Amino acid sequence: MKNSVLKVVSVLLLFVTTNYFATDKPSTEKVEKQTIKVALLLDTSSSMDGLINQAKAQLWEIVNELSYAKYGVQKPNLEIALYEYGNSRLSSREGYIKQVLQFSNDLDEISEKLFSLTTNGGNEFCGQVIKTSLNELSWGENKNDLKLIFIAGNEPFTQGKINYKEAITDAKEKNVIINTIFCGNYSNGISGMWKDGADIGGGDYMTINQDKKIVHIVTPYDDDILILNKRLNKTYIYYGNKGYSKFSSQKEQDMNAESLDEVVIVKRAVSKSSRLYDNSSWDLVDADKKQQVDYGKIKKDKLPKDLQNKSEAEIKSYVKTKAKERTEIQQKIKELDTKRRKFITKKQKEGTKKDELNNVMINAIKRQAKSKNYSW
Image 1: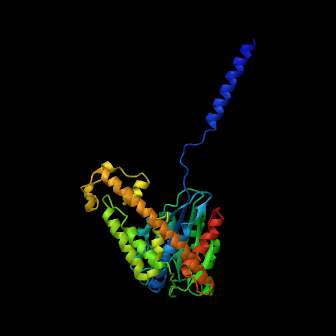
Image 2: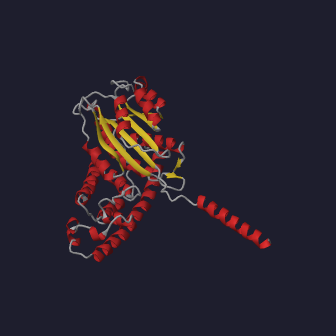
Image 3: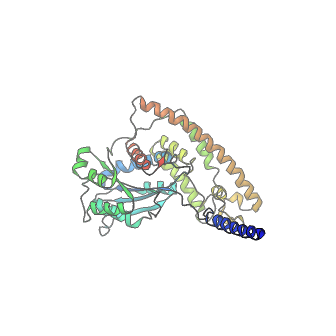
């Protein structure tokens, strides 16, 4: 009898423990990584050349700051989308609005699209461009994503057939925060309802002088970073149908940054050493790091000429060598940038003013990120 009872108990214990651990097993589902999604809606009417130039110049500084963001122990992705509005070259039927770029993490492409913008006179319909961006962009369903719109312009926020309040109601339903940047006097922005748009949209109302010359602080570390950037470029190995064109674009965006100011390419070089600068779609080093490349299927004629006659083993070895070289260069750039940032902070405390667009956007993003448990 005793043995029978023990057998029953053993069976029950086995049943309970088996079912307990079966239901308590960790989920094998992939956890969706958080993303900071920033949509820039830029007025490209005739008076906005200064705004566009500020956006071009400050892109890399904003990227660099966001590269330090954290969500718990994770580091979120960054995606940027771009719209232009208020340009008479655009279709009147579309409300003088154009999607320049869907959400993208390709930093070179974002830079390329910013530099493609030109200004021309037109009508600026803020409510309509907000609504259009909400409808067209892939905002996703992840509740932990930080979803932000920054709309910048200098005409009344009330223009156009779509009421800005209606558009912002749509934004709230998608958990998108609306930030407004009025290019002009603070009180004029208030009377033009730019502040009201930000208040309703849960964001920040900001003003900048779009025509103000950007103040770039030169540091003793800039020249060394520029030299390292040239070495960094030599570690990229293009592949695939779009490889060479993307490789060429990388150099073109370096030249675009340099055309604005030497310090801008320094900031870009820092971005190219951050985790957010990923070119695995066309660069073998990044692709190999992510295990996203099948060397057996690589088209040799789409590789650099000096690799086209190499064996698979030789190509792999070359990629490993360049990966090691790149890691060392990026680490040196990061170390120099730490010293550079300390130097800039000191100069700013001594009275040098901060860059306007960069300053207001970063401050707004950080405040809003903290409310969703992001940290720096």
